[in-house]
Amino acid sequence: MRRLIVAPAVALLFAALVTPLNAITGNWVEDSEHPFVGLAVFYDAKGEFLWRCSGTLLSPTVFLTAGHCADTVSGAVTARVYFQQDAGAHYDPATQVDPVSGYPETCAAGTEGVTCATSDQIYNFDFTGRLTIPNTHDVGLLILDQPITLPEYGQLAPVGTLDTLSSSRGTKETVFTVSGYGLTYKPNEHAPLATISFRERLMAQSTLVNLNSALNDGFNLQTQGNGSGRGGTCNGDSGGPVFLGPYSSNLVVAVTSFGLNTLCRGTDFAYRVDTAAVQAWMEATLGPVLWAQIAP
Image (cartoon, rainbow, N blue to C red; front, top):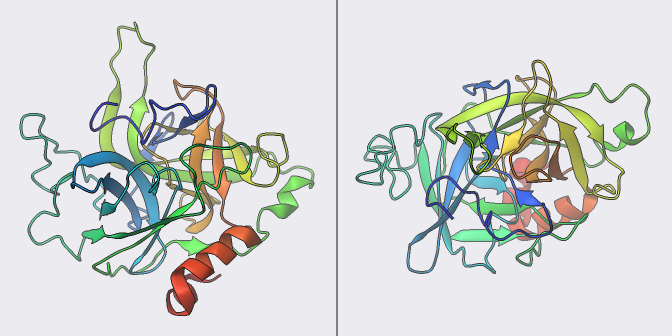
C-alpha cells in the first residue's frame, strides 16, 4: 500500500477482482457544489496513518462513509476529516504533509472545527474486514469531535428511493453524481503514463446499470461512468456519496464501495443507504438525538 494514494485495503483484495474504490475518473469537474463531502483519514491505536477515504457530512457531527473505511477489525481507531475542496493538493513529499490543510497528520491552524475535525467514534454495519458479495455491509459512520457548521448538508434518501428503478422501463438513463478525493487515472503496471492524483474533491455523472443482478440483489447500486460526458470512481473515493440526480443534487442514495476492474475502467458498485436495514442500524447507532438530525 502506497502511503497516500492507495485506498483502504486495496492491496488486500476482498474477492477476485473486487477492489475498494477511491477517486473520480473520466469526464470529471472540480466539486465546489458539495462542501459537505470530506476527505477522511484513518489512524491506528498508535496514531499512525492507515488509509484515506471520502464521505458525506449529514449533520454538523454525523459523517457517512463506507464500512471498509470504518474498518475497526483491521485497526481503525481514530479519524480526521478535511472539508477543503483541495485538502491534499499542496502535499509536500519531503515533509509528507499538506501545509495548507495539515493533511494527513493534523488540522492546520485555524481549521479545526471550521474545515477540519477529528473523530474517536467509528462505527460500521457489522463489517467483518472483507467484502461479502452482494450484501457487503459496506457502510460506516463517524461522529465528529468538533461540529462543522455549513449552510447545507448531504440528505439521506428515504427508504425505498431506488426501488422503482428496479423494474420501471426507461430507467437506464437515470443520472447519478459521484464525488470524492483520489486517483483520476490508474495506468497498467508497465505503461509509460503515470498515476494521476490531484488530491482534490472532484465529481462526475454516471448512469444506472441495474440493481438486481447477482452482484447487486437489492443491496448495491451498479452504475456506468464510461462514455461521453460521464465519469466513474477509482482508488480514493470509497465511502464517497452517490447522489441521485445531476451535480446540484444532495440526495445520498449510496456510498461508493467496489469495482471489478483494478484500473478503474469499468462499472462501479455502491452500497445502498436507502434500505430499511441500513437506516435501522444508523438509528440504533446514533441514538434518537443525532438520528433526528439526519432522518429522511
